[in-house]
Length: 314
Image (cartoon, rainbow, N blue to C red; front, side, top):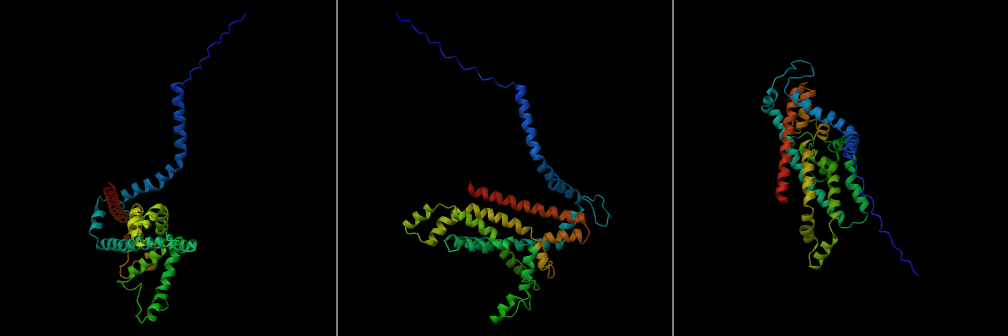
């Protein structure tokens, strides 16, 4: 006699208990509180050292504030009117734009050439990278003193080389027609390493399959460079040009240390003129007004570059 065994159906799992809305809201607020707590140090420094100085400078530009304490009241747009009519300011701004133009081109082109040479597979690549990048790590004071000695009219290396070639000596830092070019040479030698590394990293990220396919089609080295490397380096070139223009517009250290803006104001940059107006002429309000005019120019250049970049990528 057999007995039938009945199997009870499996028990269904209990439904997950959803957190109550109040508990969920409490957890969300706790997470937000933790996020604000982690962000608080950065926000404090951001407000203290960026936002507040910008607001304070804008207010100061509307006053006659001076280091002497005289005439520090509100004068409206008088500082801006004076600045737009100041020929020295326009000349300093022209010097800055001229420096930006003649320094940006070699800092981009030479950096690309050096990166392409190293990327070809030269032996001892670590030595080439170190040689090209190490000057970028030097302080501006060291570079300025180094080139000031090399530009010395009587004992400098450059004039000694010219003398060996039968060329008359050049007053590198004392001739208004040559002084800016002398500063540019020093700047290129000093800062080209950064652009070189950016280009080298971009070149090494290009897939080798492109070059192999081009070689099978009979393309030589130059053809591969202009048809594969340069198009692939487009975004990197745009970034380097933007960074270089913004950095060159803010030039101050090497010019002030090598020529002090001379001879006859031929190398004085707009940043140096702002410094002299505020701390030599004691006119902080006027200096702040020129700063905001210069800030507006940089902002316009940056917006134009962004517009051109987006238009090309569209």
